[in-house]
Length: 504
Image 1: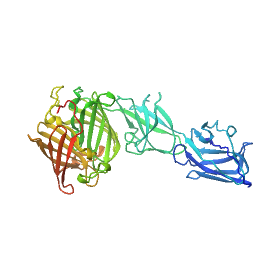
Image 2: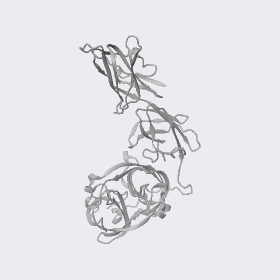
Image 3: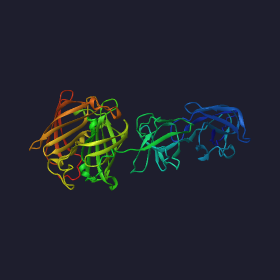
Image 4: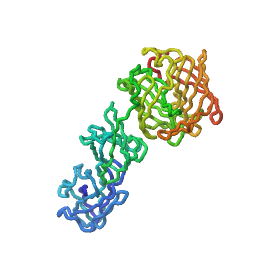
């Protein structure tokens, strides 16, 4: 099917007295520098509406075209796009809507060619190839009212989302060719999370999911995005019991995936928009290629469910070579963490490395906020120092400190290796009466992200020692000693987060 777009300009005459002229220009996608190609450009006699023999060409891959040998006269120019295209908008015709029925040479202006002039007609046309598909549940039943959203390969959203109809179908025009990712979701809260049909490879179908994106070329209707939303959840044998939100603070992991995990901090302030409680989640894990990786996410804990958007960093160096200006931050993806009770939870994630779900179990708890402590317990002393610490001048790295007892310290250090890649360290230490702690830090290796993770591949090696000196509630310092290339050094740090129900 061919949809024709008419683009016309009324141009004045030249004073030169030649019998022929030229019409040239380019055809681009409206709002972008993308050339529109292939487009057939034809010249019509303005008076008769008949095509002028020989005055036709196909534009070049860069969008430009040229028609020479145009006799003196008044003409109309058509741009014919080939393929399954739903609509075009011709801006040169005064933003007049133009489709198969209305794109008529009789209702547009004309161009006058005289005296060897070159008349340039640059057309900005809006493409509207249809992009669509169907959303069903795990039993292949259509799902109505699902929001389908669209993103480019950089994670930037395209306006606008679409809702599925009673048959589970959705479609919308896409205005220029690119690679798209699709996310389908119900309005939260919802038990449904996206999974593609088995013959698709979008691996969770989130904005930055692994697998191939959907490539939409020019002039092609693409209606093959079939998404299955299956109901996923934790082990049904786990008892669900509400607890005080501050008790969720601590470290969580899956025992079968020892070597990676989450650190949850329920903060002492309301969530965005006054909804729930603000929560920060740190994820220490690995890349699909086996390098260490860590992500930080901030979001809302609403009831038993925490939802955060993860960010990942790169580009910085270790120690004295670190510069905050070198830190590059990118959106990684999202996490939904449902706490079933004080010791068990269920995580669902989708991001740059892939998507999946796993059950998690408590690994550590803050002294005074443990499951057996009173619901309204307010912690003080060393446990109240638990939280994230950093140096503002060295923003982009820092420590997570958990006081699992008055003198017991679990420390995580999120920083960078000698090559600029992410590095995370962890270790246990003791705090003396003067507020000093020494921690033997370990570095993990051998893990891989997602389904490729095997706990037997993970090994821990001694990295070096970090000592902390705690003064006031918001001030501390640290020093490290390690083999080369890390050497030794130290900096002051200040508190970044304050946990809910802590009073220092």
